[in-house]
Length: 401
View 1 (tube, rainbow, N blue to C red):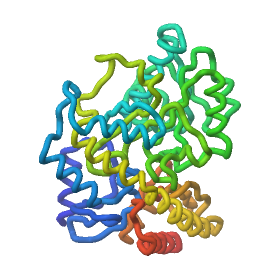
View 2: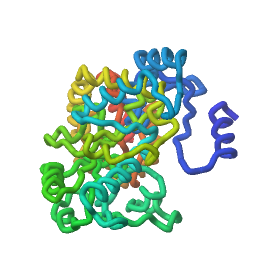
View 3: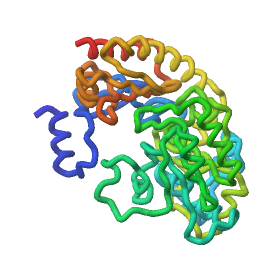
């Protein structure tokens, strides 16, 4: 067997089959390119679901991690460390907020936001104990914990994990009337992805996010924006909410915050909201550790220049112009997205999203499918226009075969 076949066979034999990866085994990577164990190079148009916004092996991030590795990597929150205050301060400033609660993974950050909203509802809004309700959108993807999949509408994510956590109401994404009708005096929060990534990079109708903001403010309900995939430069702005001039009560961040080096996530909000926590009521051994803070501080410094947001906007306009030319020609039924992020619906007659992804892999381009016939395109923000065009040419080749 080849090195690729050997590695995949071993993984299949000794790891749980909770993923169905493309049959490529990556050995090294730099920028927007990955090299497999056979020495073949592939253009990465997925970027770790936006965790690699700044590319593979970004020198600034690797140097920041190496420098911190020589000093201290973990203290737990039992003690202070010298990177923590700067991380919280700089991230709060980037978000235009006041306070940060750091965690590790995106799902942990979402769980933290849910707990924050409920605690705020009981201690500040005055909702009767055990009665807090949180409204979410259909086709959401916020993680895979038991509580989070309790309000998923995706059978693959939800099936066989019950009993499910109560306290959530699901309304159609983009429907302000349904949202208004679902709100009661016990509603404490609305949790929304400004762009639904896993659902196929769905952009809500114009005016939806401002409408959510108006409704939540009017009804004394927290607006929680899950910007784990959409935030930190991906859409051409620091946050996707900015495209409609909206500032939520709470940002949920992850993925790119760790620069593709370490897992870093956070909930960022006001002192009035995050101030509901008292010592011992929530925590994480690794959350806000020195290594994570060092890397995230460099990510924040890079975002403060605005160059990555500008690059995502400019290359994103080019990406969507080129993809738009494919739509309506029979091979592509629809294209959605914003910035360097697109969902492309392939005509079913050409194959499933998985089959198109496999054909692109043969052309040395890596993307990932979702929901049957959709492929997602989300290259690192550092990709060159020439490399992006090369990848788009490979897509045209596959679609015309």
